[in-house]
Image (cartoon, rainbow, N blue to C red; front, side, top):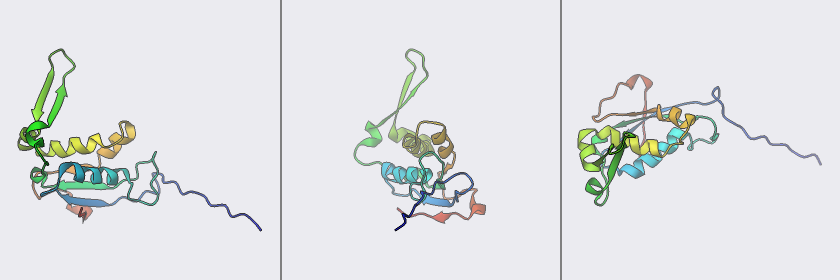
Length: 147
């Protein structure tokens, strides 16, 4: 009886097929939505997921100004910016950042869930966040993604 040899299929830049998805942020919890977005940006939803290859899809987030935080995070959660100089720490509450730059809330949450290396920076470039319902990516014919 002969042995069968099965080989594992690994993705590479030539074999990856990318799709475009639109996610509506209306009444979505920030952390839960961004965790699912980060998994799709990495390509974990595909059968041929390969950890060292960027095999994820493109994600367009609309209505980023309508995302919600649970509990008291709007006033308790702080976003830090540090200039590197003594006394250069600036903190901003989540509620204030959501009013001032709502797309930054979603972008920072997703970026924190991606790998911290060259590959993660490449994956992050496939995320597009907009405050309203309009986006300039209609030519890519994105599919609506429901969570």
